[in-house]
Amino acid sequence: MNNSNKYATNYLLWIIDQVAIVLSFVLATYIRFQNFRDMYSKKLHFYVCVIIILISTIYNFAAEYNRDYIKRRFSQECYAVFIYNAVLGVSVIVTNYVVKLGDSFSRGVMFIFIGINFLITLFLHQIVRKLMWSYWKTSDTAIKVLVLTEEEYVERTIKHLQHHLDINYNIVGEVCIDKDMKGQEVRGVKIISNRKELLKTVTTMPLDEVFIYTPNSTQNELEDVINAFKDMGVRVDYGVDLPGMRGQTSVGMFGSYSVVSYSKGTGRYRALIIKRLFDILGGLVGLIFTGILTVFVGLAIKIDSPGPIFFSQTRIGRNGRRFKIYKFRSMYIDAEERKKELEAQNEMTGLMFKMKNDPRITKVGAFIRKTSLDEFPQFLNVLKGDMSLVGTRPPTENEFQQYNEYYRRRISMTPGLTGMWQVSGRSDIEDFDEIVKLDLQYIDNWSLGLDLKILFKTVSVVFKGSGAS
View 1 (cartoon, rainbow, N blue to C red):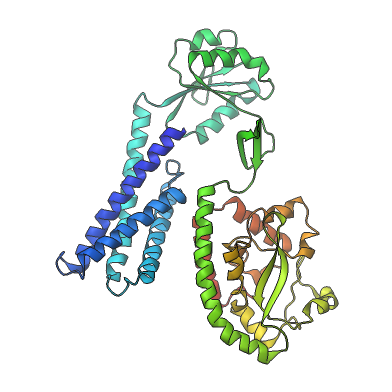
View 2 (spheres, one colour):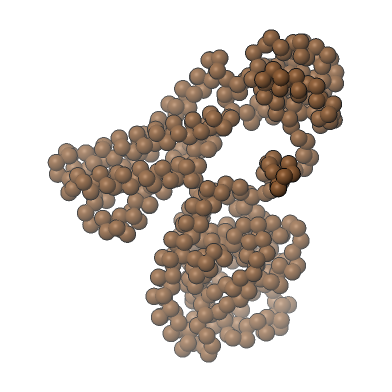
């Protein structure tokens, strides 16, 4: 879908989501009180509704939860709308607590609202999808595309475009430039011309865009064709052959040079900004709890063994940056020196060290590790920006010095207090490559929704006391 249609769809869905919120909130209020007279405060409920609309707007445009709306299957749509409503519910509850509206606003209204809003939003999204499909398939407003390619790529190009183009594109024909295949049909698309008759054929046909994919021909060889389409006012999309180049590829400027940029991971900067804002908020809240815990945990550490309350160590952050990580001390002060003596008992395959019943761990240390209390001082790292609430595991300097290119990619994103490894039974993983695999899986599939999912799972893991050692 081109940018103008994407923006139009996003704004349309935003408006629909706001209509759903107002309708759901009114219904939830009526269901809770059986009328509109007996609610505690009409003004208060109006303010809460406004808060929900503001949170919805931020989530719509920052997290871009509707970016794949057209391509989502029903199950994927259910999941996206469910996460959206979960974010609304949690955010409103937290906001009401912070501004002290919790005692005056009915929690029943909020729970009823979430259920109703899920159903109404899902219903309206499905109606809009049906209408859009019907509109693009039956009207003459779809973007008409002509495909130019070579004999070797005729079928695979059409197949790829049919699977990946949005519904507002209509492939009106194909041209094979290195062999006369005129009149043949490939996957329902007719080959309308050969190279010689191309311009004569297309001059009088309805056409909006041309997609050219010719890996065996240079752009100079097709210059006359490209210029002819430009003169007709037809947009030309020239496919650049990038064998083996997976991930994000974009064309832009570097200084005054035109460049093709390759990257893996995320380039969704608005979502990353929201992620950082959540980190700052989470870091501040976490430090409050850390301060309270320090009184009790710090005293227990001091009584149990000599040495400082806190432990710090140099770790590797995003793209190789060094930073000091902070934890409650869970080992004796000579732990690093004794590690060399225990290397032969390492139960981990690869670059990490792990050992059950590690003699370097103190009695208090075993408890705070089991309950993950030792991690709380890392909220300072989160607030400083060295770490994120959710991310990859930050390696030690010794590990990093042994990295290859494959391992290095796991530090292409800010390391986290929790992550895929932590919620996947970290104590049961005995292969460093498995940890790397989980970290790369997180990077390649990152979204704000995935972060929330990992955070919820982390809470469950911590309360169950599973996965930690």
